[in-house]
Image (tube, rainbow, N blue to C red; front, side):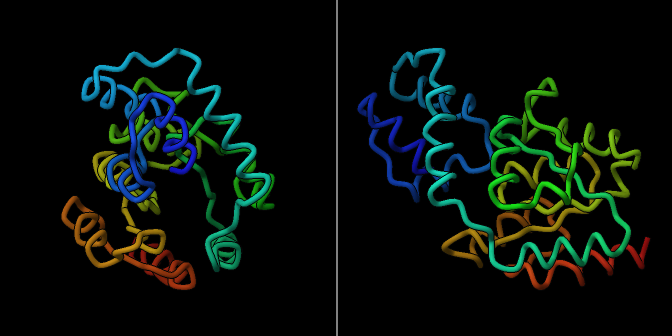
Length: 205
C-alpha cells in the first residue's frame, strides 16, 4: 500500500495507506488503476507496474517481515502431509522474491499461480481453480487462507473451504464480519490458530 500511495501521489491522487488498504487490498494493480483512472480522469503510463515492482523490491529487501507465527503454522500443516500452493494477485516474480527473502519458498516450491496465469485475477475464482488443478486436487477439497474481500470472494466462488485471516487489519472485528458475510467458513487473527482449523477440515473431509 505504501508503494501504491507513493506512485499515485505523482499523479496528484492523494490517499492514505489505510484508505488504499481498505479499497484495494487483494485486487490487482491494474484493477486499482482502472478504477482510479475513471474516478480522476487520469491516464496512467503503461509501464507503471514496472515502477511499482522496482519500488516494492526495494521495500521488501529492507523491511519485509513475516506475519508472526506463520512459519510454525506452515511447518505444522506440512507435517499433516498436505500440499501447499500460492494463488496470488501479485506478479509471480514479486511472489518469488517475497518467499526467497522470508525463507518460505521451500514450503511451496513451484506451486505458485498468479493473475498472470489466468484470464481474470481475484475476485474471479480463476487463480484458485488453476492452483487446485495443478496440485491435482478438486477445488472443493482445498483449504484457502485469505485476508481480503477480493480473495475470499474468489475462493468461495471457486468452491473452496475458505478461512478468513483478520490479523493484518486494524479493525479485525469489522473486517471479519465482511469476510464472514461473503462466505468465509471461519475467522482467525493469529497464525497459531491456523493448524487446528486445517486439521478440523481434514478430519471432517
